[in-house]
Length: 574
Ligand code: C2E
Ligand code: CA
Ligand code: CA
Image 1 (cartoon, rainbow, N blue to C red):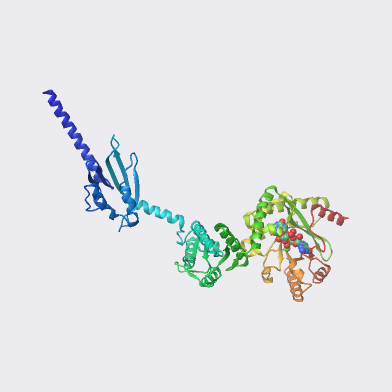
Image 2 (tube, protein in one colour):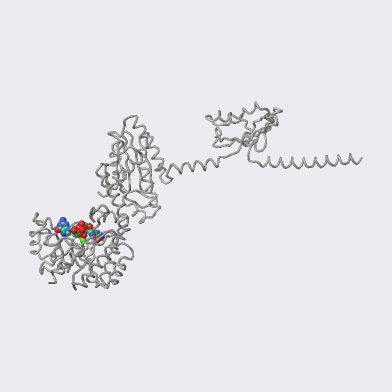
């Protein structure tokens, strides 16, 4: 009896456990977001479970043959692979695939697990359908971001490179030409700084739309970054080529861009063009060549175009070589100073010397400051170079002063980039005081280019320096916009008349008249005049006749090292 009771209790216990399992199983199924197909392979029966209706509403599947009813739910090109997947049975492995549903912008992931019995034959199979539309959209977005620029909607640099290499393959087979045009907006940082980045972005977008018009099977249009764009034209013809696109666009930007904030912006751009196969054969090289000549176009001014040619590349490569060598030279302070004497015309007395930097590279080749200073200005090396020049020339000056008790002036060339650094005035004054030099013996040579940007900021700095007694000289007068009227308010002491002007006085009557006037006016304004690059007696005599104060030039003395200056001072003190 007890035994029977025990069996009944056991059955009850098992029953309630089964009921609990059944509840749990129903709960799992009813809350699952996936649809599930369970196939009992031994019995040949199929059950649909969980969220079935939301995937395949009204589709009844009870036998393995019914499964074919699902095919029509998948978008056409993938139906076959979907069918194959559903019929795949692999032990110990979940296999899956993602499909787009027909007539619906919905993606499903299908996962299959097959169970085998001890004899190795298929016993059960579970097919799970999961909605992955969201993940897919994110994937789409990532793909978009990898290939497109979100601001302009144009393809990005990477995608452009890949499309261009395909185009090159095509051109190779067809013996065709491809033009690559690199475009860069002029003075864009000023727009960005002045009008804000929101406006900057809008301008980039509007210009992007302007060039997008040219996009077709033979023209690839892309946005690289910021304000740079690149266009590739396959087989350019008479009607559509880099030149025609450039001039059409240039015409289009003559009208100001109307911005959403109600204001207007006037833009211009420069372009560089390199052709396949003439300029380069690979996509990256072509883009590089086009970019290099674009910089050349910029040197000509706003709204310019420049075609690739070999000398430009040679020039560029030589600049790159110099730039690399320059880094070493700056690190090792491989520079020396030369000094060119200046003389008073009237008394023939030594007025002072102009400090001129010299650089001999490792191979012993002299590289002219007119070549490396502009490069150093571009890459920032001018700051340590400029500091070296100030210290080294003042150090030499102090030695001469001690030995020869001279009252001459030391002129130091200052680059605009160096002058713009925040603590420039203070750092010069610090060196002057550390060497215990009279600031009135030091003269800084600046050029008109200083005055073009941040005029008032420059004037403030000049005034600070002058308050301490440092002299300021305006170099290269006659080469820039050289208007006499703007000289009036400038805090300067000396005006240096450029060699170009001096050269023209013996050739051209008008130049003589102009020079005459300049010297007369300059003196009236209270500035001292120095004529530079004086190479012969004729020039010297003329300058003397018009009362130019001082002369500097090969005719009287070439630049020399510190010992050369010492010899000169020793001679003069005799
Ligand atoms: P710059 O300031 O106009 O310097 C005068 C240049 O004319 C010097 O060339 C000098 O050697 C040269 N020169 C002087 N007299 C004559 C002459 O009678 N005939 C001819 N043909 N040339 C003459 P350099 O030393 O090659 O310097 C070239 C330019 O490089 C300088 O022009 C200046 O702009 C820049 N530079 C030179 N040294 C420095 C420096 O220490 N710092 C900075 N920032 N720039 C420098
Ligand atoms: Ca100078
Ligand atoms: Ca000069």
